[in-house]
Image 1 (cartoon, rainbow, N blue to C red):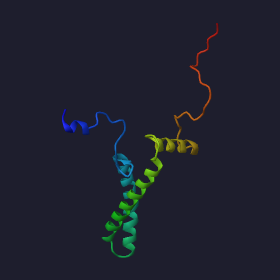
Image 2 (image 1 turned 60 degrees about the vertical axis):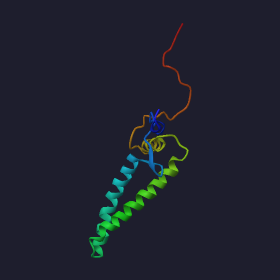
Image 3 (image 1 turned 135 degrees about the horizontal axis):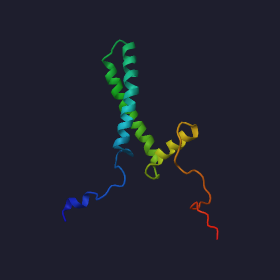
Length: 119
């Protein structure tokens, strides 16, 4: 058995965390959303001050700050929680506000298999 065989995981049950509790796909979504917000805002502000070229620098700083802050927020949300916790909380929130139907079972009680046996 080679030394590197011990370092590689045989199976991954979840996407690995790469930055402050976020996976690559989560960081991608955070980055894209922050770009969509910061590019128009920074170019508008830079245009008002007459320095359009400074808009890119302002956008870069805004995106870096937003990614760092959002990653910290996700790290706090996920602390001690199972994988997919905040996705389930989002689905429950959307269901409670009437924006989406949830397939999650949200009530407790006695369950049976649905067949009635009369002897």
